[in-house]
Amino acid sequence: MNIILFGPPGAGKGTQAQQIVKRHNYFQLSTGDLLRIEVKNKTNLGKEIEKNISKGNFVSDEIVNELLKNTIKELKYRDRIIFDGYPRTINQSKNLDKILTEFNQKIDLIFSLHVPRQIIEKRIVGRLICDKCNITLNKFFNEEDIKLHPCGSEHFIKRKDDNSETLMNRYDIYIQTTKPVIDYLSKNKNFHQIDGTLEIDNITSKIDTFINV
Ligand code: AMP
Image 1 (cartoon, rainbow, N blue to C red):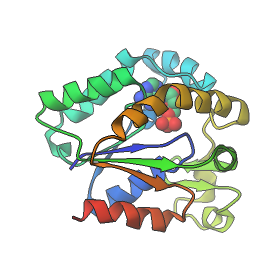
Image 2: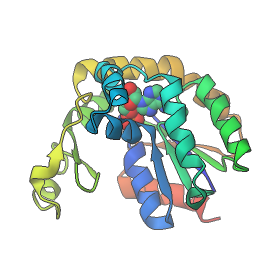
Image 3: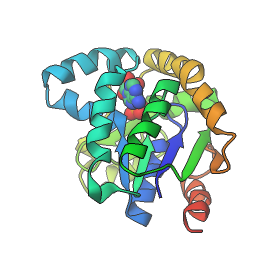
Image 4: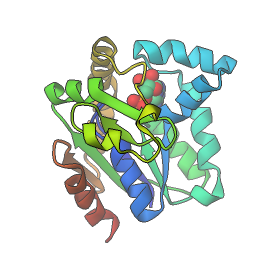
């Protein structure tokens, strides 16, 4: 099965993707993570990417599609991919169909995590990510877990684009550009909207009921 996880920034896509990876041995294809690796490696491409990410704008389709295709073509990931952060535009959605068909793959399940705008802000501004294991926690909600984290609390870093100003732009782009993709796909039988304000485990169990059939 291949899965798409949709949701505004801070909806918990990454967290749920990590849960699915752990429970069902999936591969999380986060285009944001792939782009951040390029930035971290300070490649020429990375510098170009950073300009867009730091403003909250999209990175060009050309760059994202290339990174995406490199993963989809790997045999070991076939039928086990969770798309987190892709597609974000109608064009990307068409491109995904094209690449999947090329590799004899399809999308089996689509989840959209719904979280109101007011809740998102606190989640994004408090979000911290461990630069060793990539787990996401929140300084407002998980103070104790951060202190006791096995990799060491000093490994928690803040994403540069997780600030109030950039968030506004990211959220607006989500409503204008990604929401229409979700509205279009919501007509499919395999589409499920999930309340993203529920407890993490509660959301995971809901998702599990569809994966376990
Ligand atoms: P994310 O980790 O999904 O929140 O993505 C972080 C940033 O990476 C976004 O704000 C965009 O700048 C860029 N990005 C991630 N996925 C895509 C995509 N599918 N298309 C264009 N830009 C993307």
